[in-house]
Length: 183
Image 1: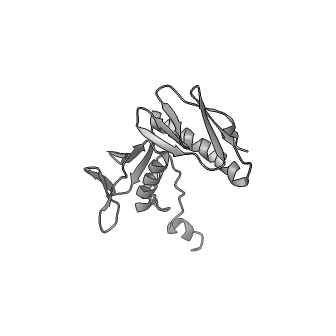
Image 2: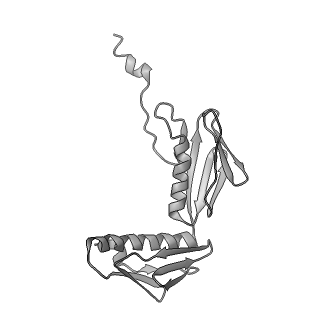
Image 3: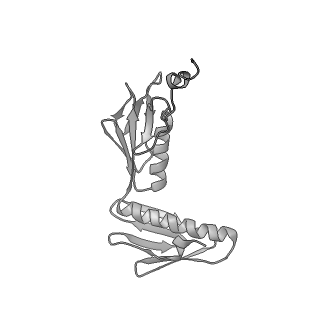
């Protein structure tokens, strides 16, 4: 049973919701998003409250119940505020540049890596930080993961691209490991 789907989703001011032919459409100041209602679920919109009920109590139906509630919640938050992920670049000579809408990364490889963001995603640079923002939570996370995958942080010096606030697990180098063996 989904605890999230049992409670009705309250649509805030500035967000319009519409249910037509099994598709929930949300529009707000950031833009428009559509979420398809999953099988075995019934959606109902009354007085700026969106509620989901389980039409068939199957295993897949129970799984879809929480999923559709979470997707609708993320769509409402996306069209009203948007989502942002911040990546940090660490390392000597590691840098990023913007060429129009494209992001160009120089991160210790033999060639610069050029990344084109999908539509609806905005990339901004501030010194060694890359901000990925947009209204679709999935696209923001996927784009940030693709940028991080170009050069993930390595465990000895911590060089690479990592999320802001991410704890990079550090390993001891040869000097510390070799001290006890030499005696």
